Image (cartoon, rainbow, N blue to C red):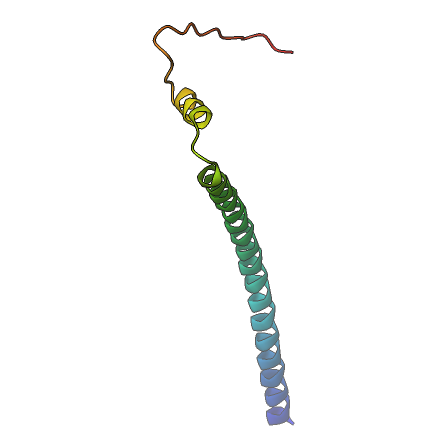
Length: 93
């Protein structure tokens, strides 16, 4: 009887160790999964931003180069005519 009791205790300890191992593994996987989901969300937002940037660049490339377009780009970059007076409106609607 004594050896059977010892084997039962060893079996119970082994089963308990396996269960603890599985529980720890599952918790560890859940933590990794949440980290990966967060990384995925960050990567998707970066992809959207880059895609929008590409779309804007393609739109600018598709715009025909006219005098009005050249003036618009020059104004965006701070260039103006020498005799031009610039007025700024700091008032909100």
